[in-house]
Image (tube, rainbow, N blue to C red; front, side, top):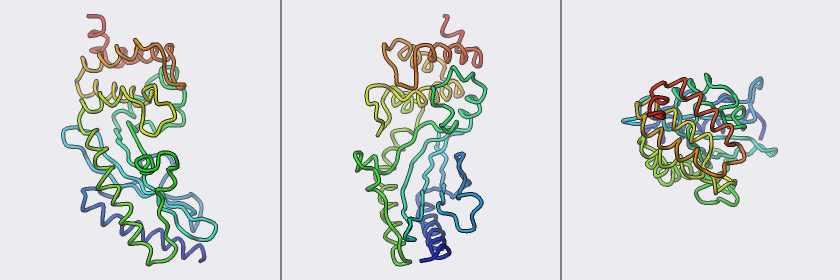
Length: 250
């Protein structure tokens, strides 16, 4: 199959996916990351990212998002792989104001508004997440691919979102290693910082203080973090949110 034919398969798959996700309350939207919706500069892109988002009741400015990652292999077949995200523009805006040394060391490679994320493969195939891909070689494969994708959305992804649908949920999850992370001993440093920022933005000052007190008291951190970076974040967040500094010194 030529590039034009493979591109039609990708577009048709995305269109049917959009219909199925709309039933679940997700609306197709512009790309929520730095990579865009398609490989730039190509008439027939080798990859496309289709994003779909839904607001979370009771969490203003926070969205649940699903991203379908479609890629053409050398034979012209299209692979379809899914990701789930919890995103917040508010968190991204505050992060952009903080000193680099107050953030986790890998912050430059992360999406600033991403609070938490997981690949569909982490749910069923944690040792080989690529097994969660479906494949579209001809038009007749599209429906099956969408069914497989939606099976995750209506199952494990819905449950994953459900455990991250309130501030209290996120405060609890921030103390845990990320699902599928290599480091299963330490909390994800980016998620923890994001939840502290989100809690403070929502007026949950004491909850943010308690989380940071717990984190600052740990004797080890993720490879992306350190006691020095944690102290710098604590100080920077106190400048950005004076109410946090006041509660910390009370």
